[in-house]
Image (tube, rainbow, N blue to C red):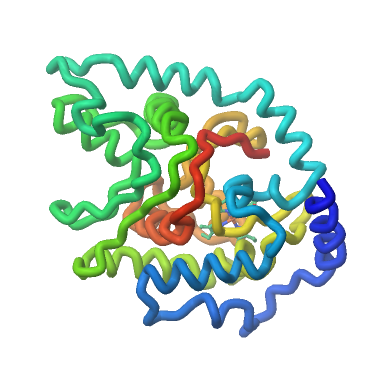
Length: 289
Ligand code: HEC
């Protein structure tokens, strides 16, 4: 508690000085066009460890709740009766249901607790595969119709898989001998650091440079660990959402045009965004305001 309180004093002091100046020098040590994925990860994790020196490593998985004691209290109350619980149960039911050919999701994934390995580079398809996309590929391989992204059924299967992946460490692989994988990663990285929208802001400006500070009623979570808990129950939206739905929300905040769920742009973005959190324990599905 003491650790968290000293944080909040820091937050209050810094809250007034949130600026998004053009040409700001927030990230030169973080964004390096030439860096390998491994070098990016090291540099980014160091950036956040230096920025939040007292925060225990696994707390990064808790996003804004690791930054502010009051919102954390509210969240802990929510977690007593987790709003995602019925969705996980439904997901378990769907997971064990047989396809028409007698197989099931297990025939593709082995076991449900594999979310920590996604997104994954698929060399054959030459594209980044996320968990929802892998669910649909599995269905199609078994002669089933794909599910509509963002809808309850696919979210439920994903939520059950996330639940069974709890405690596993994020372990996204970018094969460095595969030019396609490196390009996809690089596209995601460029997306992350590019300014966009009428407000002309990059993801990094909010989630690196001003992470831990307040923006209206919210505390901005650090990018590190943001991938740990999807899908998440979002109270504001009254339901479970995927990380791509969250990306659309953040794009809209800066009045940029969002991309479709599971578009190549968002899959590449997720690839970069999750790789930086390698080593962070998963704790999905989550609950967020
Ligand atoms: C104008 C500031 C702003 C920008 C720019 C922005 N976000 Fe956010 N983002 C927020 C706020 C506010 C929240 C909700 C509070 C929080 O968890 O940080 C949020 C939440 C998130 C979350 C959920 C965090 C969690 O723990 O559940 C993710 C993931 C995320 N943003 C990714 C992105 C990405 C990727 C981009 C760039 C496409 C981006 N954001 C751009 C303000 C921003």
